[in-house]
Length: 376
Image 1 (tube, helix red, strand yellow):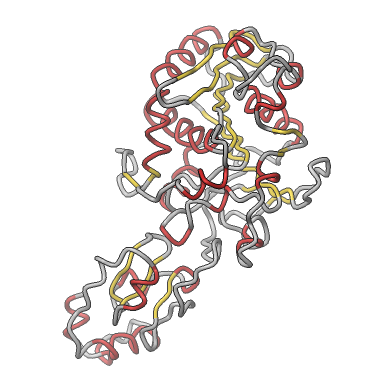
Image 2: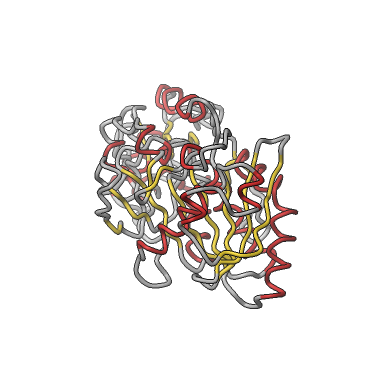
């Protein structure tokens, strides 16, 4: 890059014309200090800078990072910039990059997804009802379940379960979503801090809070799964969750695969974005199959914002109807951010529904669907 700035645009014939024009625009000026700008608005107000959606960062508009960014994934007011966006208003889901993976293990199976939804729903019930598998409709919906272990961290207000499902022939791990009185407030307070905890993928950035939530439950989960694998060697560990639980499930599936060598699969409902595009691609490579269910105008899958460097993994399974009983679905593309699926409402800033967030695969996923005596 230093050589490129010292050169004339004409001496760089390997660059497309638009890129050479950007170099010509800024070559005579001092290199802009873009990194300190941490929001799209501040970045675009700075001369010679571009906001890069995939990394959630501000960079020199003439840098390789900016010039090689997909045009839909960056914004800049620098003349000649190849970025498609010119304003800091970046609709969620406007950046889509093909090929993050998903659906490696055949076609989507609605009945299997519904079975996993019951496990995710059961995690909202009381500890005794989970342990005794007497939680009401969700427990009744999945017979032939054994060896149920409650997973709990009361300090962090986290809960889940590990069990063996004879019908699926798999170990199931499921995590509870947020029990905040206001889903909207939880989304607004989610934050965008990221860390890189995976030694196998050091460039992958994961949401700090979601990863910490998984680590708070990890020891109990790993012990319970290891015990079941002794009884059922070689079976798949199917991981699931709803809302916050879906993000925890994603990190759990990846961590158990990378650091324990277990075959994991992921079936999630209304998940927020757990990390960046590097993480999304790594998930597609490591997890045996990923079904990420989204519902109509559910607000949670659009947080944290894509514009701050967060990106979903494929494969999304989109249920467009607002009627929870309408189970028509669409298998989305392999980008993880298919503009024809849940991201279509984000383009119009219309993804605001809490009701859609609480209804998945024909079921209500919260404590209301637990046995009548339960108050969570």
